[in-house]
Length: 149
Image 1 (cartoon, rainbow, N blue to C red):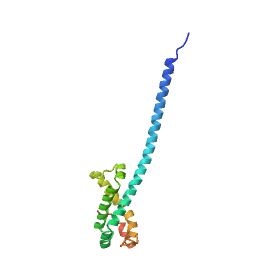
Image 2: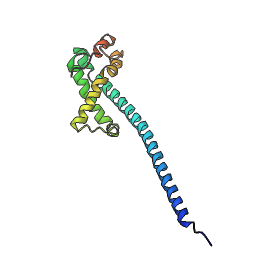
Image 3: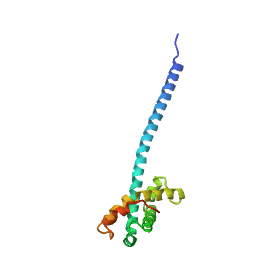
Image 4: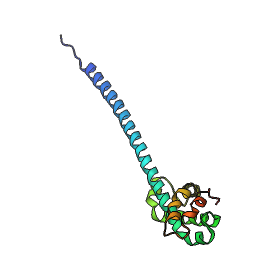
C-alpha cells in the first residue's frame, strides 16, 4: 500500500508561497515607505533651496527700490516676492513638479507664494548685509519684520 502525499505537499507549497508572497509584499511596502519618506525629505530640502535662491534673486532684483524706500517697505517686499515667484517658476520647473506644485494652478501658486513670504527674512538678510548691497547691515532688522504683502 502506497500513500499519496501529493495533495498534502501541494497544499504545503501553496501555503508557503502565500506566506512568502505576504511577507515579500509587506517588505516591499516597508521599503517603498522608507524610500518615500527619504524622497519626500529630499524633495522638501530641494524646494527649500529653490525658495531661498529665488528670494535672494528677488532681493537682488529689488535692490534699487530698497535703496530708495528701505528693505522693510511693502512695495520692496512685494517686488521681492513677485520676482522670487517668477524666478522659481522659470529656473526650477522640475523641482516644483517633483514637489507636486503646478504654478499655473492658483492653489499651488498661493502655496509657493506663502512659502516665499515665510522665507523672506532669512533669505534676504545675507543680500541686505552684503557690502555690495547699497543699504547694507543697518537695515537687516527691518528686513526681518513680517511681510505685509
